Length: 194
Image (cartoon, rainbow, N blue to C red):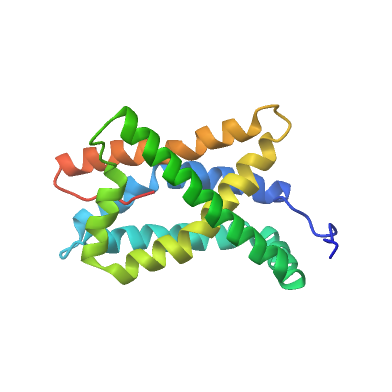
């Protein structure tokens, strides 16, 4: 089976500009704005609901901004479902292998380490399992793929260490999320998660 390369594999220039603008906004301003607006509600949303709102807004913006890029990818997935299945299976295998290796190394280096992000997601899951599932399994992956593979990696591929730069950028939202969550928690609010 030979894969067709007629479809473009990266966002166009307009998608790239709007994508970087949205990426900065959703990373730096959107969690704070949602937390602020939630604090003004007469019945504030719980963390799981607030995160779901964040995920829906981000997913909707990605669908609008990257519509041509996603349309092209969807066309390729329909034309070559075997490649899609192969990518999904290999992605899960690589993810779990890296996760197990990382957990093992962290366990050796820092016994008793507790991941704050895992704990906060577990707490939200106890609040509303369905919203957490829909957000993390359905809404987040396409948005992250568009941002990190489609937008950032494709624009950095000319660098000799593009994979490392993309990986470093991919880790930054989690660090910013902790800072925003800690700030919101000290005010008694809940921050939207990245």
